[in-house]
Image 1 (spheres, rainbow, N blue to C red):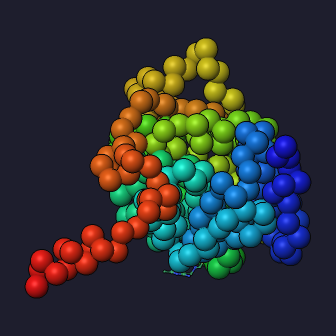
Image 2: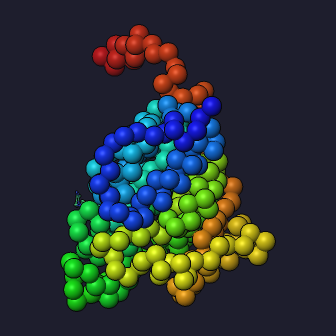
Length: 285
Ligand SMILES: Cc1ncc(C[n+]2csc(CCOP(=O)(O)OP(=O)(O)O)c2C)c(N)n1
């Protein structure tokens, strides 16, 4: 039996008390335990930042790489062993800033991974600079006169690029978020979940009360997940309310089905025949 304890480890955690990352961490553990996935079948990949430390606090395989570069690492792991359940943890700066080009490639290739963006609308690890999702005028200790850039819209960007699964979660709704993570993992293709994550130290604007006043669960009976127009409308709506749940889902062609050599199963399960390589090398000269 796989329960929450299977994912427990004692690695020292220095996130601030009340950090929204704890809610995300608990939701991930819950989602994995509820699906009874053994830790050895899970790979967490991350870049750099406070969000990117999440894999340290779970007992399973992980690769903690470079800032913005988690998605290409996940693509490599997927090529080697597409039987793994791959979750990618990135901050909003990590994913939409430094890693923005890799996000575009992941969307076009439809990588079969679940991307969890801990979107706290600030660069947390480096102490409060405005990030790509910080709103115009966002003031913090790092830019007391406010950000002069407009915020990007991750949901609308993903929708415009043909994403097949996009959802928005909230760190204060752990059970709901765990359900989104399960749905994302079950989706064959790239599942992107943008998580409203509170940074209690460097973002004085997007607090728990900010979100608690605005969060609205998407009603599956009212919002059809395969309705692209409804989804883009939702993604672009002003922030008087913040809908959370699955915004859009459609059937797509997943990455691993596009690579013909993967159709016979994961590469790591194949027997290697160095003599076949040698034969080609000999032929070349
Ligand atoms: C290429 C590169 N640019 C910048 C940095 C410095 N840096 C490290 S973490 C970070 C900010 C991380 O912010 P975010 O991804 O939003 O995650 P958070 O810490 O808020 O969870 C920056 C700018 C770096 N390590 N590498």
